[in-house]
Length: 417
Ligand SMILES: NC(=O)c1ccc[n+]([C@@H]2O[C@H](COP(=O)([O-])OP(=O)(O)OC[C@H]3O[C@@H](n4cnc5c(N)ncnc54)[C@H](O)[C@@H]3O)[C@@H](O)[C@H]2O)c1
Image (tube, rainbow, N blue to C red; front, side):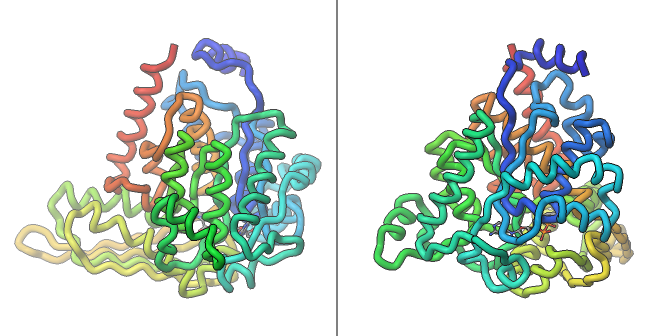
């Protein structure tokens, strides 16, 4: 540890204020696993397996340590963060009991930094599953955004820090066209000053508040409103780094590694059918057709992108309550080779959603903080490897996305004193 500190100092890292991490959906399965995991690793109760930022790839790169992260966030459900962690322990067993016991006082303390969010504009499925008391309910989106922004700013003041990263880990909002007013910052401002202001999705308000405060923002969900063009304009104006959409953690991760193999051997994929079953709250929200559509859209985008031709694809998602956080995906690939001979491949994936996703969130928080410190702004395209639908990046091949990341790290190294 002492050696790591010395190395960080040598790499130009000054003694600094804590790194604020603001999670939207802060008592959700994923956010809870992020917070518990971060503290468990920082206290040597667990190893850093799963975190890319704990590997030699990042040697010499001045990243925040896990111990300097302080957490807060918005949530709409009742209960405490400790309740959420205990539920995960009992239902999934992914949080070990000794970790839960050791972290109980800390989780209860962090819970005091979780503020009620808003569900105005979130859609019926989320309201049904995620509603709690004291939510922000103003019919005017600007009023809700200002309250959200003040919650974030007050947390940063309390923690005496200006370093903060905001991550959207809230439920997937319904699909559908973005409101026209989100096309440009000017049209958004105009629409909001009219007598009948538009309804904006909560993801839009959280991202707006974060970017307006100059905090790097990551959208781990498929909710498109979070990084609509109007908000990207705001981010550019404020010089803030940001990225999304929809963390790539399971079946889609495998697809993005496997599809290039067919391309590299000129094996033509005729059809790629995928079927996912999952439980939990995420699954309950995705059992609503409109919310599911948003997820399918990000999961289905990559195959033609990698292979370079259209093919028959299908992504099915079904809610199976008994599975909890354990997701099963079954993929069937029909392809042809030399002499047009047809062959098949199948794989099944049995992953645990939050365990796969939480380290990605911590990696990206560290890298978003790093980007801010390096003076980078705009889309953090080098984080494409972490997303199903990386914003504005047409590169879906996992191997090429790996190069985007390593090239960025080389640039960082070259810029260090
Ligand atoms: N492997 C993964 O876990 C994975 C991968 C990619 C994307 N995601 C996305 O991450 C998100 C979180 O996943 P999860 O498994 O933790 O789901 P979850 O349902 O357990 O957690 C979501 C939390 O967000 C809260 N919430 C909903 N709307 C909110 C709002 N408007 N403001 C504040 N809080 C709100 C809910 O009450 C809930 O506690 C989902 O959108 C999911 O699609 C997860």
